[in-house]
Length: 317
Ligand SMILES: Cc1cc2nc3c(=O)[nH]c(=O)nc-3n(C[C@H](O)[C@H](O)[C@H](O)COP(=O)(O)OP(=O)(O)OC[C@H]3O[C@@H](n4cnc5c(N)ncnc54)[C@H](O)[C@@H]3O)c2cc1C
Image 1: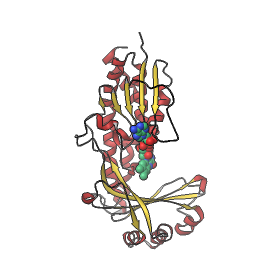
Image 2: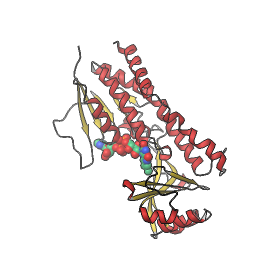
Image 3: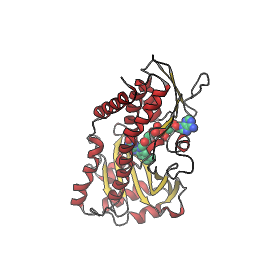
Image 4: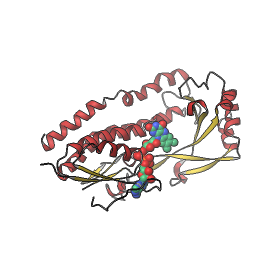
């Protein structure tokens, strides 16, 4: 007989929201989502937690419960890369970079590789804005707890001084227009030995926060939600739901930790520090794009079928 299973999701970001959306199709799952930000609140009676899913982001509280606070992988780490993100009017960006690189009909993201630096830009908001991201890096020894810092225009100027004139001018005009600007550090999670402890698990950034070099954090959250919702949807009792969490861990941990690792490696390549690529254009061309193959050429349907097979083996059909 199928029992009602109560599920609490902590965090209503992309991981929590996509998961709750996927779980609502199962009538026997009594799902509650809790979000600490003001705009979105859980309303209703307090519930006891059969299953707790931590979708509470990179600062996850739930993650610390799973391996224990003293575990080296309980907390995220600063990779030392920082980035300034800026939105500029389309015409202004186009005047600086030229029609060939800023064109409303071109959805490409352009990335420019320097020696320890990286510049990315793409057109947003139906052509009204252009997003710029400039990157540099610091030695992590002295600032392991810092999440952001101010970067002076002079520092950006210095970092980009050797860049080709058109790009250097764009950086000067578009990104050195204030005396200093806020930058965020790029953090990631060290690989956890498990995402699950009994009836508790983590998903999304709470499980595998990654640097954004391969733009895969949100995609991984959605893949997690596909597998978690499938397994929990199959569970007929809270005990089976716990078995489902274990299978989620087995099937998702390897892939997600591979993406985190690959993303960091891609950051090394894109900031011109790759051992095999350095600043050589042909080598960068040849070696950069294939880094996305395992992320993109991924059969989510097969992944889901594997999870179902493992669940059937564990708890029966
Ligand atoms: C600079 C940058 C660029 C990025 N670019 C890309 C990209 O191009 N493509 C891509 O796929 N990904 C990208 N990402 C990553 C992506 O944004 C994240 O992977 C994704 O948003 C994670 O979603 P999440 O729901 O796991 O976490 P979050 O979005 O952080 O959501 C967690 C939620 O939990 C809530 N919360 C926290 N604590 C509690 C609590 N105790 N109780 C209740 N609620 C709580 C928070 O308020 C928050 O709403 C980027 C990230 C960064 C930093």
